[in-house]
Image (tube, rainbow, N blue to C red; front, side, top):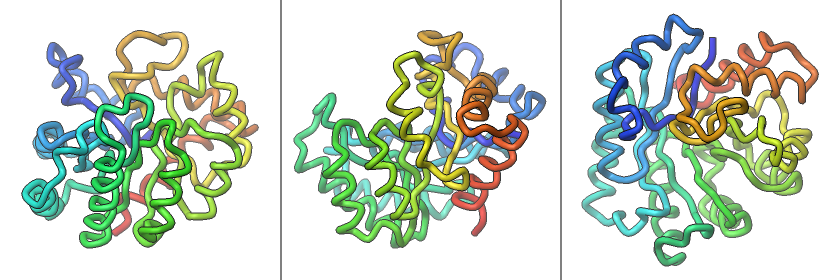
Length: 255
């Protein structure tokens, strides 16, 4: 069975068949899914979705593209939502210097405040980091984020950065990019990622694996990622499923 540790099933891409698709997951080798908030609205939607399906869980948080939503009121609301037993993480939070939609200092401040919230409620963090490796790692060290741990979602940096992230005790989110022809850098970084630090994720509806690249992604396509991950690590697909499921349970569900 597979745990999808990062999905966005509240996205409008699923409006026509959301319930039908989610109901099909348990019969198709998907054990659990963590639906991840990106702003305050999608965070609320994620929690509602988790209450509708027993195998759907939620992460609450504000993505760097919406970092200007973080204030005393929104932080208080996020803390309140963390009281829900279906909420298992703070995320996705972090830095995005690729789109740069919000001033970088505002992004950094929102990142720090949400790490502080994670420590307060004792939940792991789900980190979004794009073209911001140094600042992300610096903040993780400065805020002692290893005290709660978490995952570097959709890992996209170098081998060297992966070694630092691993020393901090963080996990690596691996999804469809691993199957892309231009995913060489990720496959190289994968060499230094210990098996007990790898999580499976879709980031659906985005980043569908080959041969579905460019189409809508969903948890049902994770076996394509499993197959490539097994080849890269020289183990069976059954071992990949077992190990990544154990990893997800250890980080998000063993409380």
